[in-house]
Amino acid sequence: MEITFTGKRALVTGAGKGIGRATAIALVRCGAEVIAVTRTKADLDSLLQEVQCPSIRPVCVDLSDWDATATALKDIGLVDLLVNNAGCAKLQPFLEVTQDQFDMSFNVNVKGALHVAQIVARGMKSRGSGGSIVNVSSQAAQCAFKDHAVYCATKGALDMLTRVMALELGPYQIRVNSVNPTVVMTDMGKIGWSDPEKAKTMTSRIPLGKFAEVEDVVNSILFLLSDKSAMTNGVTLPVDGGALAC
Ligand code: NAP
Image 1 (tube, helix red, strand yellow):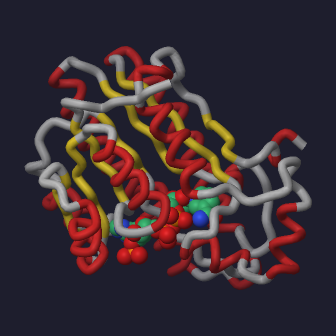
Image 2 (cartoon, rainbow, N blue to C red; image 1 turned 180 degrees about the vertical axis):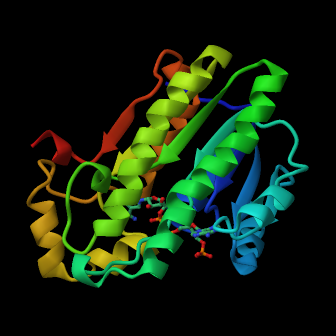
C-alpha cells in the first residue's frame, strides 16, 4: 500500500526529536510540505540539515505558552494534515505530584494540542476541503502505570478530546484520530524504561514481547493521515503489540 502526500501541507508538533522528528521526515519523503514546530532551535537546525529539502518550514515556539503559539502560527497558511505530537512526561509518585508538574503537563499534552488543532481546523473549515488530524496519545491513556498519574491523566484527556473533535469536525470532513503507542525508546521512553528489570515488567505485559519502534508509530500516523483511512474517525489506535487487549 503506497501512501503519498504530494501537494499536501502538514504541521507536526514536537518535530525536534523522537516520533515527531521521524514523522516530519517521513511526510517530506511522501511528498508533503511540512511545518515543523518545536521549542529547541538547535533541533530545528539539525532537522533542516538532515532533510536538506526546501519543503520543510521550521517554527520555534513553546507550545505551553498559548499567546506565543497563536503568534507563531498566525501566518502558517493552509494546512491539510496535523500531527499533534509534542508531549512531556515527568514522572512522580501520586502523593508527590506538584501543582507545577500538573500544570506544565496539561499545558503541553492537552491544552497545547487543543490550541494547535483549533488554529489548524479553523483554516480547514473555512477552506472547505477537509483534513486529517492525528493526536499522539499513549497506551497510558487507558492503562495505569506507577508514577504516571499526571501523564496518564493527560493522555486520557487527549483521547476524549480526540473523540469530541471527531464529532464536531466530522461534518466539515475533518477526521480526527489518535495513535496510542506502548513504550518507544526515544529520549522520553528512556526516562521511564531504561532500567532492564523495569523494562521486562512492561514487555512481559505485551503479547508481542517487545516495545514499539519509532517506525511502527510513524507508519500508523501516516495511515491515519492518509485517504487509506478515509472512513476512520474518532478512533484511538493502539500501537502496543496487543498490550491493551489483555
Ligand atoms: P521526545 O523524544 O521527548 O520528543 C518530544 C518532542 O516534543 C521534542 O522535540 C520536544 O522538544 C517537543 N516538545 C515537548 N514539549 C514541548 C513544548 N512545550 N513546546 C514545543 N515542543 C515541545 O518524545 P517522544 O517519545 O518522541 O514522544 C512524542 C509523543 O509520543 C509524546 O506526545 C509522547 O507522550 C508520546 N508517546 C511516547 C511514548 C514513548 O515511550 N516514547 C509512548 C507513548 C506515547 P524539547 O526536547 O525541546 O522539549
